[in-house]
Length: 146
Image (cartoon, rainbow, N blue to C red):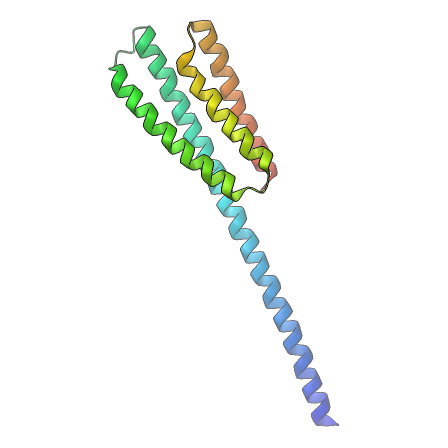
């Protein structure tokens, strides 16, 4: 009888330990995913801000003086920053389970790209405000998914 009780107790203890270990593993995995999402969302927002800033600078280099800088140099920098933003977008899209967030991020990148195509100062200011607000809204939306 004592042997059966000992074996039964050992079996129950093993089952509880296994369940606790599995729960701990799931919690650790969820926290790692949450941290990776936070990193991806932050990197994308930062990449958008840098790309946006460069396009505004390029607009001024092409249409107004100052600032005076070679537009070709700034254009190349803008291409590089767009590539960084696209890579960050891909990471965001891979890590989020919300398709809407991925589509919003993609639309925002295209909206920011339009900054270089606006023709006058008024249109530039409108696009700057819209894209700044768009980045803020994307950050708020991403925060809800953490």
